[in-house]
Image (cartoon, rainbow, N blue to C red; front, side, top):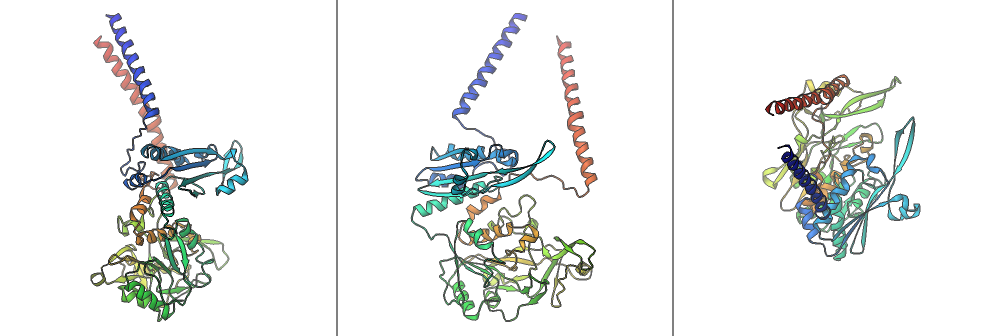
Length: 501
């Protein structure tokens, strides 16, 4: 009997080893991975599959990286796994290779266009400064595109799809396919709005800055307008005709002018030609300032020289995911992680929804109030006391016309200025790019930004002691209680089996 059992165990062990060997052998030939995330964050989208099917030549992707860069940016551990799925699906039309930058000269690295990042880390008893590289180079049809530094894979699929599409367009002879016309206040394109052009160019757009006055705007070009006070009556008339001809536009305009380089005082705009044009098309920018309890806390030096103070500034409103239109491409990727769109002294916008097929796309929270005239924008004033005496309601800050041509109006012209340096919210400019891509009809591409690979915590802790208690409790359960339960269960099963024998 014992000999028979021994043979059975031997056969089982042999079959197990054979199955394991075959699995390893098959895995070398057949690529398999399981994506258990609800939104299939680690799987390619249908848009990417269609793009790969349309390839007429081979795409070559090279990851130039410092050895061990994944240890500094953990999500990069999934980069190779993700990109390999392109190669498997594309039938050898997508080639992926890795290259250690230690094998390249400094001149070669600069020529490629890689940008290093320096990270300081604890090494034994001292701090060590590491210079890291992690850039992607894509080649297709004689064209080359480079992502200078990749530190996560959140919008990797978007970037790869965008760059391949750009190279496909150029290979097909469409060199001006992604041109956007821009109106911006004079002498600010390299100053207050110095990030606008680089952000658009990185997104693959050719930027054509319009010099005012202007009497004609080609209706086939998407239009980005920032601010309004500088626009003369003739140029405003050209914008009016542009919109009447079903031109596509994005407008970042406020109902007030704020001295952002001085004392932050706000003054209502009077006889503003562009605001009048937008009103004729159903967008009414009000000359008020919105205040919201959900706002950015700023650190400023006190006037009495008592040191720095951190204060809530209700004019710098943080838009919440719950108050924006769900599934609207313009908000793709804007609320992943701990991000929130940041506004600066926004005005309210009202719309003529019935007449012009206009909808509200984003609002402040229901805990908002409006300040009309006699603006007190001093950060050290007690504006928060106003919330207890004024009526609160949600106020619209983003509106959109869908038909006959898309037009997006954001009632905050400072949203994409260098004010983002104060708050560290450069993703406001990503929102600008989303808006441009939206009016250009690239929603399927832009929606790829919605994939969120970083798992957020189930609970946020404001109290450090509460957080420590929760971590301690979790460790007791995982390191002591669970192992004891497993051990007792194993002993119990073993005793039962012995009794049966």
